[in-house]
Image (cartoon, rainbow, N blue to C red; front, side, top):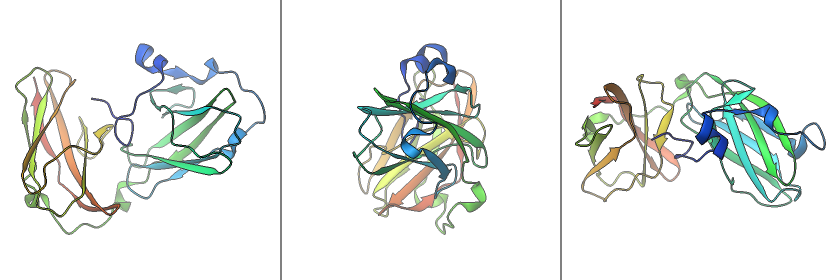
Length: 224
């Protein structure tokens, strides 16, 4: 289950078909930097915040990004947007400390970018005093091929849960935002579409009032 951002965003159809998008496929029109498009490191580790100005020339804004300025592996479609003002959008669950390149596509308007920004390094991760045992976060091989089941117990301290994961602990390129859960109860969530015979590492991110209250230690399981 690939994640694009905050939660697993869908890419433009070219990403689904070919696994990458070449910026050369889009014709640049208008000013060199339409929409005053920019990117800066985000507030949390592995995040970048983009900003642009909606001048009402486009009907929709889509985002392409990756670690190569000519080929993009990830994307987000139909970004939340308000006309005649500056807008921002944060891409999460990037590899901390890695430079990413972003292009903004105004549907019916122009293409802006690429612009580059470093995903916030992990050493800037908020200091969290709670630890793994608070939620009892675990991972185990799922019953269906290519799945892993995660479990934890909500104790009422969080209002929202996200899950980040990948094949290397501490470097997560996938994720799920707003994981469904039952308050004050034992919860399970199954991650699917995983590569067979591959070990995945997971962290549970608990948030309250927009701030992280707990970022668990990684747990792992083998997808079969």
